[in-house]
Amino acid sequence: MKKVAIVGAGISGLFFGNLLEKDKSYSYKIFEKKPSLNLKDGYGIQLSVNSIDILNKIGFNKINANDVFFPKKVNFFDAKNSKKICDIDISYFNNRINRYTTLKRSKLIEILLEGIPSQKIFFNSNLIDIEIKDRLSLCFGDNYNEDFDYLVAADGVYSKTKQILFKKEGLPQYFNSIALRGNIKNYENFDISIYLGPNFHFVIYPVNQYKEFNFISIIRKELIHEEISNKDLFNSNTFTNSLLNQISSKSNLNLIEQVEEIKCFPIFVSKKFQIPQSNRIFFTGDAFYSFPPSFAQGAAQSIEAANELFNDFKNNSSNYYQKRILRTKQINSRSSLNHFAFHLSNPFNVFLRNIFLRHLSKNKNFLENYLGKIYNN
Ligand SMILES: Cc1cc2nc3c(=O)[nH]c(=O)nc-3n(C[C@H](O)[C@H](O)[C@H](O)COP(=O)(O)OP(=O)(O)OC[C@H]3O[C@@H](n4cnc5c(N)ncnc54)[C@H](O)[C@@H]3O)c2cc1C
Image (cartoon, rainbow, N blue to C red; front, side, top):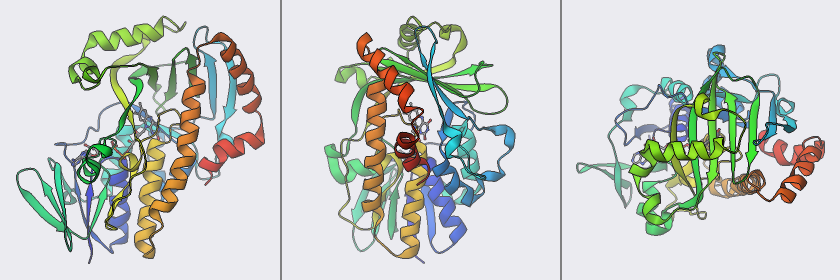
C-alpha cells in the first residue's frame, strides 16, 4: 500500500485525510507543527456551494443546523453612511442540497477532525527538510525522519515545503494590506454585509443560529520590511486599536464598541505558480496558491484542490496541476478585481463603481459568468 504524508492539518490537509480515510487504498499520516488545533475560536468562514457539494461527500450535511448559517444575499453598503448600494442574490446559485454556508472556522476543523483517527495526526511535527530519493525522506524537528511515496504539502501560505524546494522563490509576498478580524454579537443584518470605504472594506456575516457574527476588514497599508516581520507589532493592542479606529472614523457604525476579540495580521499572497520537479510532491490549498482575500474562496479552493488531487490519485492520472492552474487563474483575477473595486477612494471613481455595481448585480449573464462559473463548477 502506498504511503502518503500530509503536511499541515489545516482545511486542505484534513479534508484530504478524510478522503483517504474513506477510501482505504492508501496509508497516510498527517503532520502538524502546532501542538494542537484551536477548536474554540469564533472567527468565521464562508463556503460557497462548490465546496459544500464536495464537503458533503464526507458527511458535512450532518452538521448541527444551529452551527451554520445560509445567507441569501450579499449586500453592498457605503461604509461612510451605511447607505445600501446594491445586493446580489447568492442563493440563486444554491441547489436543493447545497447552499452557500457560513460557519465558524473552528467548527469546520472540528468536523474534519472527526473523520480522522487521532493516531494518524502527529502534532508538534515541524517539517524542516525533504530528501528526494527512491522514496521521499521527510525530516521533522528532533531528527525524526520517515520515508513516504507521496507528499501532500498543505502547510498554508507560508509553506515550509515550498521554501525547501524553491528557496526564496517559495516565499509569499506582502499584499500591502492588513486583515483585522473580530466577532460581533447581535448584528441587525443576517445576510453578508460588505461595507466599502476608501482603501478598506469590511464584511459582517452570521456564523451560526446563535446571533454570532464574524467581522473581517481588509485595510490597505504599506509597511516596511521590519514592520511586516515584527510579530510584536501585530500583537500589540495599540496597533490593532489604531487600525480599528482608522476604519471606524470613516464609517457610521460604532465598530469600536461592537467588535470584540479583535486581532490583526499582515496579508501575504503567492507570487507565481510553482510546480515541483518531483511528480510525487503535491501542493494544495494556500500552499499551492494564496489569493487576495476579497472573493472569499481560499477555504473553498483548499477543499476543491484536495478533492481534485484525490481524484487524480484514484484515477492514476496526472492532470492535477494543469487543472488547478486554470482554476486558480479564474479565482485570482476575480479576487484582484474585487480588491481593486472595493477599495477605490477617488469620489468620482466611487460614483462610477457604484453605478456599475448596481447594474452588474442585476445582470444575470454577468453573474453567471463572474460567480456561477466558480460556484457551480
Ligand atoms: C483575512 C482572511 C479572511 C479569509 N476569509 C475566508 C473566507 O471567508 N472564506 C474562504 O473560503 N477563505 C477565507 N480565507 C482563506 C482561507 O482561510 C485559507 O485559504 C485556508 O485556511 C487555507 O487552508 P489551508 O489548509 O491551505 O492552510 P491553513 O488552514 O493555513 O493550514 C496550514 C496548516 O499547516 C501547518 N504548518 C505550517 N507549516 C508547517 C510545517 N513546517 N510542518 C507541519 N505543519 C505546518 C499550519 O500550522 C496549519 O495548521 C481568508 C483568509 C484571510 C487571510
